[in-house]
Amino acid sequence: MVSKINKIKLFLLGVAGCLSVLLVLVWPFTQARGQDLVRMIPFFGSGPYEILIFSDYFCPHCKVIDEKAEPLLEELSATGKVKITFIDVPFNRATPMYAKYYLYAVTADPSISYALRVRKALFRAALEKGIRDEDVLAAHLVKNKITWKAMNEKSVFPLMSAAIKEQKITHTPTCMIRYSAADVKRYVGDREIWNGLNQLKNYLAGADK
Image (cartoon, rainbow, N blue to C red):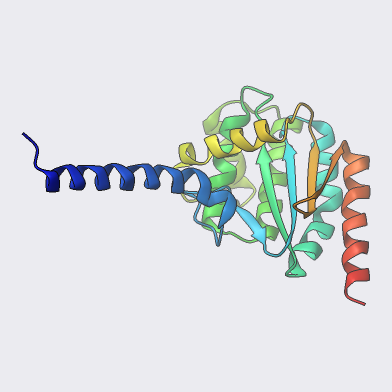
């Protein structure tokens, strides 16, 4: 027969186990800090405004907006007011392999400038070279002077999938810009996203006056 004290101990252990699971699931979205890629989707910058960019490396329009908005995204990140997150949407069977190397690369260098350079190399591999073999992709990245550090990408993929499902992403590129909890704007397509990013830039410039 289990004593009352042992019952209490078992109960507390159960609660602790449940809390640990909840922290893994909730912490990345509520208290995300730094680049702890084991528990969260990597992000760049910080502040009350948030940009989520959903894209697929095999999507031509995703490549267009990524390259066009590169300096603007770096500028927004540098304001200290904007958090930027790139989420890879696996519309193509090879996309998870590409997403893995993106995560590996930003583990080695967590700067937004490096992340954008990595993404440019991955877009080129997908759309210009049609690479679907992992060894060939790795060789392509080495040739483009992209370095990486292995991490547990399988802990990040479910978080990306949850974000894709939560935001009901059915097309790429899609961009969500959060001005506040009650004001989240959605932009679909490279033209809409370009306009949306510039609207945020202008809004921040006006807020500083």
